[in-house]
Image (cartoon, rainbow, N blue to C red):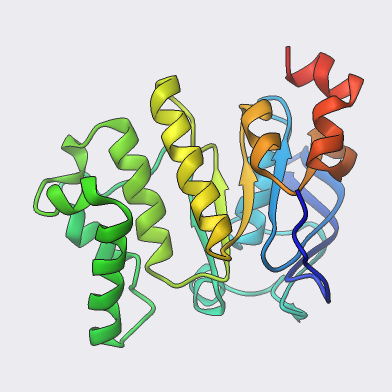
Amino acid sequence: MSTGVSGAPLLTVEDLSIRYGRVQALEHVSLEVRAGEVVTLIGANGAGKSTTLRSISRIVPIHRGRIAFDARDISGARPSDVVRMGIAQVPEGRRMLARQSVLDNLLLGAYTRSDAAEIEADVQRQFTRFPRLAERRRQMAGTLSGGEQQMLAIARALMSRPRLLLLDEPSLGLAPLIVRGIFEIIRDLHAAGVTVLLVEQNASLALQIADRAYVLEAGRLTIAGPAADLLTDERVRRAYLG
């Protein structure tokens, strides 16, 4: 898959190390994402994939290294500042406000914005993109199916108008048919020019829609390259593709 992407990276992670107490979660991780790409990070449970996304969102403190977004150092930024700059994360497990409506959850995604007319226009855009959510706009988010909650989590993140979308395990706990639908949504976002960094247990699906990929093992990057190459890489096939 060719991106036609050039120029400076939109996101640069340099020599990133993260510790939880005495546990080294990430060690010397360096990666980049260019505007318009879908880049995937694959690896086993506990490899440090979610920690990488949480560090980019500035939710976990950095022990060593640097994170830059659009050539600006964000290593010391607050999570809310990072959202304002244009990075939105869809967290693992969706994290809905279960007792709030679908519409209220969407509006929460625009909490850093004050342009009321544009926010309303974006709500309508998300309802056009996700007709199921439009049908359930007044329904409590906690009563939605897993697939509908994942759609809502993605739509909520898009309400901040991100330039980079971080997706953490979007297929987790979903039936295969629903997973295919979620990956179609990611494909559509890619086609619309949204830049995506995707963490995903389903390595095969992730590599099929990504432009480039990184493999994370026990907190260290071990393999990197075009996603199509990793699909046929014997080490990746043995470890992650069955």
